[in-house]
Amino acid sequence: MTVAASTQPPWIKMLLAIGQGAACFAGLVAMMTLTLWALNIPPIPALEAIWAGAVGNREVGTLAPLAATLTKTAPLLLTGLGVVVAWRAGMFSIGAEGQLLIGALSALALWSAAGGLPPVVLIGLMMGLGALSGAAWSGIAGWLRIYRNVPEVISTIMLNYIALDIIGALVTAPGLLHGKTQAGPHSDPLPESIALPNLLPPVHGGVQAHIHLGIAIAIVAAPLTALYLYRTRAGYGIRVVGQNAEAARAARLPIDRLRMQAMLVSGGLCGLAGAIELLGVTGRLGRDFSGGWGYTAIPVALLGGLSPIGALFSALFFGALAAGCNNAQRTAGVPSFVAYVIQAATVLVIVAARAWRNRKSGTEAD
Image 1 (cartoon, helix red, strand yellow):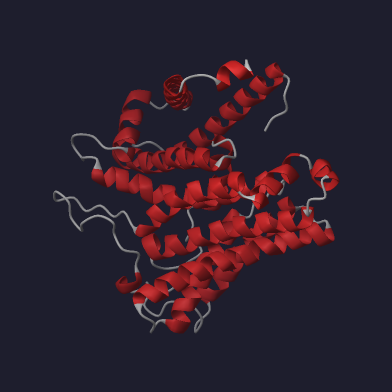
Image 2: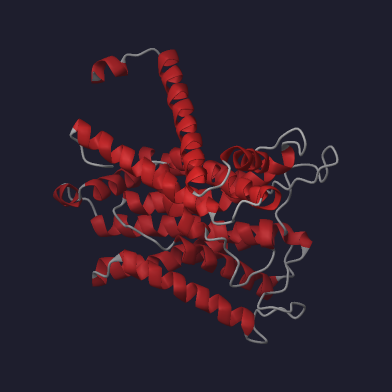
């Protein structure tokens, strides 16, 4: 079977891939329909509203909905890639949310300290510092696991709360990052001069659609992460350590160093997501800065099969679901929690299907 599969012509492999994609899409639609029906929500109007919010229709066009989908996809993709890298090393990090928050906080602190720099330089430095800060925050959990045997599941969850409390204190206390022009616990908005540039004209066909540079950075990060994991010595070592630490030890691989490297790369991706979200979307920082992107990153990575390219398509699905459900809430009265129920149902179905497939084939789950 393996030989036959490896000698298939490319066009057959392409058709099989297209067929699998179509079957997956049909399965997702069926699962969403059943979920809506179980919640006593009329499926057809709700699905139409979700589709219109995610992809568009004749009434609203396609540009603005697609822009909303891509805007929500960017942080999900970067944090999802972070989860993929850490989990591939056997480091089950739950800390993408805290790393995202610390990345945004560091970027904002740099603007507060060096706001007089040229905008292009400042934007680059803010994104770079966001990535470095996220890596450092993730490195704390990596160090605790390697040198103190503290489970990273526990330490990363605790670090999430610490990051949130730090931001809450800084944006609330007068004289720190609390905004002088803001009534609530938020920082002042960033000036428009350092916002990430829009990749589209300001108005296209009378429709305002904002697709910022960070979206392109996030999409490019997916193949770069795949190259790192599958085409570099470090990536190979990370995957070996994650699959079988004893075999990696027998092969004299530097297990501790590889695990720490995976955590640093993971945190860097998540910190970059926070800086991009600050520069491209929110423009300010508060306790409500994140939409839970760091937590949703876990189902993004799982649905993507812990693959960088799979995470790209998974993040697009979750981004479309978030944008579509927002529209469904406004136009069709669909409750806001429906998106989370669909996310949970999707992950459960995918995990169950993979477990059944692996059990049937006699292999362990990936």
